[in-house]
Length: 124
Image 1 (spheres, rainbow, N blue to C red):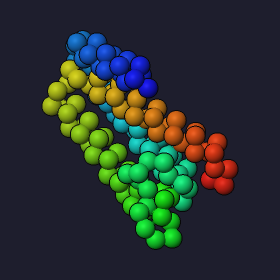
Image 2: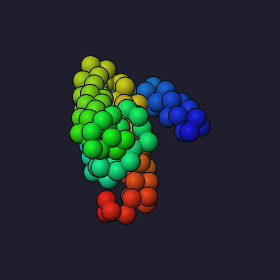
Image 3: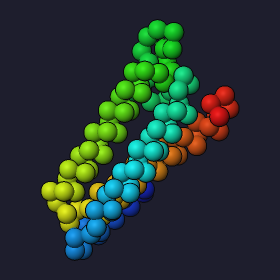
């Protein structure tokens, strides 16, 4: 995991040094991030949740991914993608780096979705 994060950080530095890239360097990865986060939320719904931040604290679904976790995941994802779009408009030279970070987040959500679907056959 540390190697992947180091690779993403270094690739952001390398890609940010070129001229102004197209806005699609941000729009495409943002859409991928939003789609992967949605798939992660759907595959986690009412299933046991390992991430304490997304776990329901009380009630009949305590310890599972339910409304509280979905709201937090949506808030973080929408906040990050909105910040990506705004920052790419203000700093056009950072577009590739922002795109790489969003693709990394999409990959993390995609990996979590694949894990959820392999461990929880009822969510298929």
